[in-house]
Image (tube, rainbow, N blue to C red; front, side):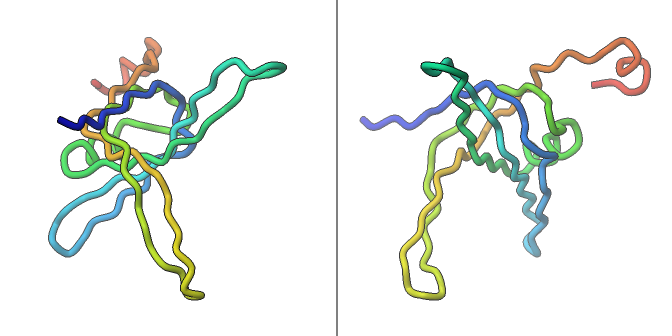
Length: 114
């Protein structure tokens, strides 16, 4: 049996972009940076993340640039051919769970529930 699951914890690179399709489906796209110790300085890896439906709606409302998040999903690859006929691909995480790890401050808690 094959198994494809990835879990990352990192910081969001920009506010999620929401895309609503004619079918009514909603997709959120954003990037997450993870880092590890390198020989001389930390090494950062950027991960493209996509989520759908209710997870996308929640991400669009509550996740913001700089937030620390846990992303759980599967690693997939988008493949296409450009206008020159060259094959291209881009890895991404299809997330089924996104959990905000950033603590809200007292003033944030007074403004709105999370």
